[in-house]
Image 1 (cartoon, helix red, strand yellow):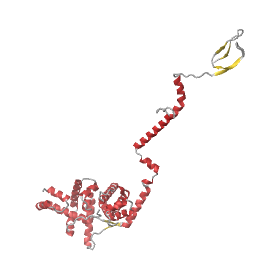
Image 2: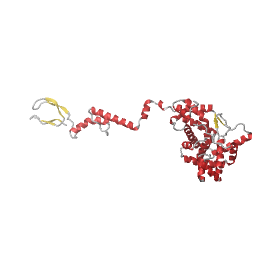
Image 3: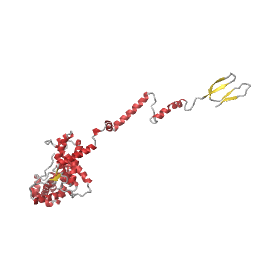
Image 4: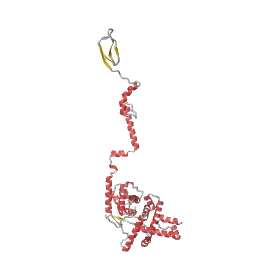
Length: 209
Length: 188
């Protein structure tokens, strides 16, 4: 089961194999929860969106066509669920004090610390930088936020993003460009330290498939 | 290459330089600065993107419980009664064709029994009850004629003698004997 591709697992699940569905959940729960958190900036709601996404996969499994990549199909579901959640909670403030990145109320999830063995000062700086990125992304309008998260955090191609957002590639490129400009302005003071610390890197795609 | 082309290419092809872009960047400090700025931003976003690590056991248990609760509340389509499923699967066109077929079969049955096909505008019960009266009406051109009732009569003595019987209910004037006065014995 572990060596099968997500498409193969989905086909098995369409045939009634529930263990294939569980394997898909195991592979994609972290990427989908992270994606939801990047869009919603709320820990509990991100978990709810991740759960709802997989419920939709379970109940709409017959709608999946192998021609479409499973990852794009899954992210499209997650995006739609997250957008519905954003609309539903529109009156609530964008920054929730309850959404602590270290919150572990029910033990269901926690944030990863990227580098272990770093000094306390570096860790504080890293936390501050991470918090700034989180707030900067959360402050973007939803359409720009979604585009830049999918491109620069999830590492997707423009074609995949266009399929997920159901809009032309040119629109996606325009949104990414504008989102980057807005973010670059808001995160100006952190841009120097990021490149100095790590050198040039490319976003690593999570949950390939 | 113009600056707008260079910046568009930075977005389209990522921040990796190609030859044309490299040539432009060598000659344009503004675009070079923009490229470096976006490169640092991309690095920052990739490094600091918030990542959630979900506890698999709790998440999966909660997820499957939610799925069970929803699928229990909403039974699968194949669990519906067969007859109900058959009706719901009928399309309007096939339903109309079936109704036409049933009406045609009913009309044919009536014709084969020798009865006139009822008019579509008259209820069947009313038509059956009025059929005999309609036949009478057609025969006499529409006038209502009922056969005269008969009444018994007794003649004790006349020119023929004593007689009894029934006669139609109408006016009769009996011819009296020459030596008697006329007597009305029956009337309308």
